[in-house]
Length: 229
Image 1: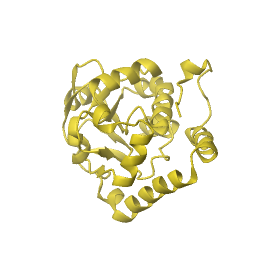
Image 2 (image 1 turned 120 degrees about the horizontal axis):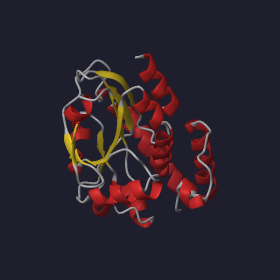
Image 3 (image 1 turned 60 degrees about the vertical axis):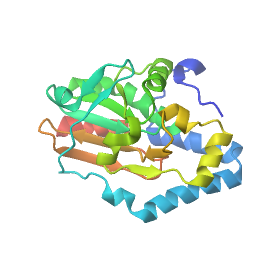
């Protein structure tokens, strides 16, 4: 199933909440994706939650690790440089092949003026290569840096990484989600989706990480938090 960007579909930007947009995606998955495939993904999510990965992620009040990563144009971007300009919003996502990641980043693009309006900066981090990030930024017209976290080094410091189990690897290969190609390594590791807001002193002000990749914080709530912080 190919998930088209808003520009590809010719539709205007979706003004609905991210929760409402995701509900539509879930309905399509329930309608078109085989039940046994859905069951495997559901088991992975359930097992990740039981594993306690969510409780082990970097929490509010912690010091965020410094990082320097290439953006979708190959330019190195440092967290220190961004924090010199204001608060920093970091969205960790799985990749351009994930419809929920696409939906989230398109929604974050819509609230980008609100983020910048309070002097904050936005970046999105994934394990996919610079080239894949370039394709994603270009296809979905994203105007904030997509950073390539090779080997999930930064996401690992945030406590977000898990290895894709074998039965899910089979499903991904069957649907042409070639993670070794997309990410440029053979690790079959992904971050659970997470959104952080980091203050200029490096302290985490807001942390939301969910093993269920179909759930993300509302972009409007992120902006509201920044406005009230």
